[in-house]
Length: 196
Image 1 (cartoon, helix red, strand yellow):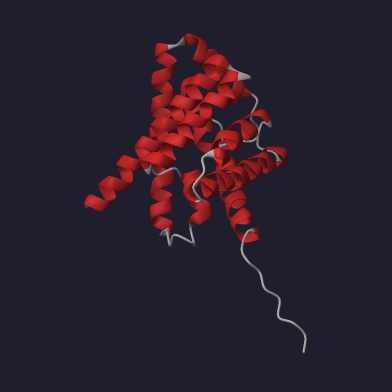
Image 2 (image 1 turned 30 degrees about the horizontal axis):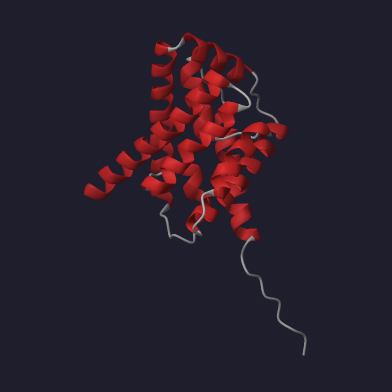
């Protein structure tokens, strides 16, 4: 029971940290917002919080149970949406920016590819942190935002701030998952047996 409560608590914590980054992104926009947004992922990594997009690329390596990963995702999404709603109540500028942003999302192949590419960057960002440097986060987070790549937890927070919902969220979740695992797969040491 304590492990489940810890999983939920750390998943809510991750959603809150990413929400703080999303708030400043919606409030300030480019070029300052994407840079400060990195604070969210830095907090997640340094505090050991449970963020779906930071975990799925390490699913096999860390022996994460699929049920636990799904629970992390569910809590991230629910908490993120709720926090976004709170943002909409305290800042009309954030709510307006969120509504405009959410209205631009659609279920399409380009959107899915942008979600995959965000997953790739997220995997590299967390991997570099694990290797002892925050530079992957500091540069990676602004990179995916400036490129218009899609992050499912940030997106659901924006939906909450806009007080709306888009089914593109499912595409984004799948894309982030695929991108992270794809980068994990490509980074494995592959040995080809020599011909005798």
